[in-house]
Length: 184
Image (tube, rainbow, N blue to C red; front, side):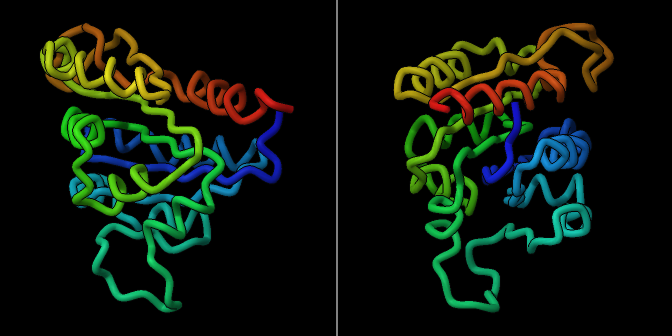
């Protein structure tokens, strides 16, 4: 399968797994996708937007109120360009906001405005991931048609071996390909 001619909006949030997102962007590009990165403020503290701009050759919006060089409503423009919105890594915070209709970041506004397929790849501490509220939010999102790729069991930032680590990048790319090529 290929992602040729497809646009993936990659949302990067404030999970420690954000360090894997540049490699994910590269893997998506190697399959032919145009990758546009949108970061939360917390995500931009872990991996600098310049990293993604260098990899994708595109500006990396973080704040809804950053000055723009060409007039467009950023979240609407991104939402319309996307064939798929991929949030990887997705924090409990961002998952909760989306599940409850809170659109207070450029990323959450983009998700609310898109008609594209949305794939969420959670990455967080096992206690957070297993929290009944987080699980209910994930179920709620699945119930309205969002796709979830489960985190894997691995050594987490706290040193414990448990579920919560970002899914393997190749598995994420495979799911993106499946979702975008389902109708072909």
